[in-house]
Image (cartoon, rainbow, N blue to C red; front, side, top):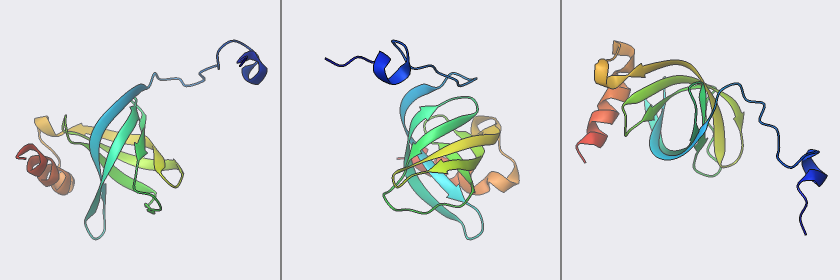
Length: 119
């Protein structure tokens, strides 16, 4: 029989996160600056300060990117804080709501969001 106290020292692991995160299954787009490039992704966990994002196996991503949540129009300027072969952990540096308008530097994110909404 499995006894979780063997691994955690108690019946449940301790959550040391300062912000609550929520499981999700949201479609997203990672948008990279320089030569404009974007990749589809799945947002698996989301909080006010970051996200865990599933990415294609073996893909390499730069340290900074925009994360577009296509359902809501939220865009997060983010920094990669960890990466594995199939996922990345992002810390949000700044967030925007495309429903309220967007700074000109988010033009590509706005275009991709509008394109997604028309499907």
